[in-house]
Length: 127
Image (cartoon, rainbow, N blue to C red; front, side, top):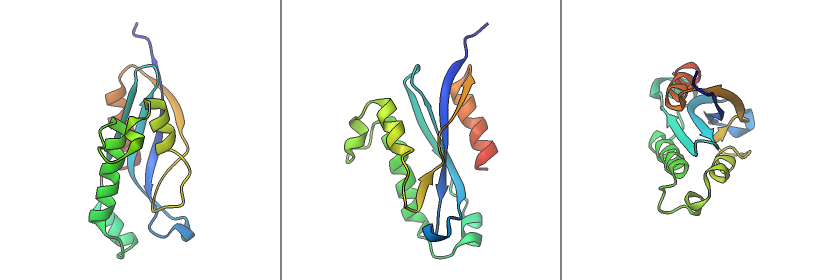
């Protein structure tokens, strides 16, 4: 029997008006210290977001989410955070923020396949 891998995940949220604390789930962050795994998967649903708030620059949101994805992979050339160790990058990505892109608190789980778990969580929470 394959050993289960401990992981943590958080949901990326788009918060159009921070003062209202309303949000739309736009992505998932998945982290495993043991496997040195950290990935971000996101999707911007234009229709859902525009039904929620018309005032957002979706290209700017996409650019920011893409930057978070590159930071997770440790390949963002303009961010010092990309040079952090994987656990530190995850903690930075999931830190409490008062910005239009926030994350939920991390949640634990166990799996035998991190990529499949990322896809499952993405389908459950974002799509």
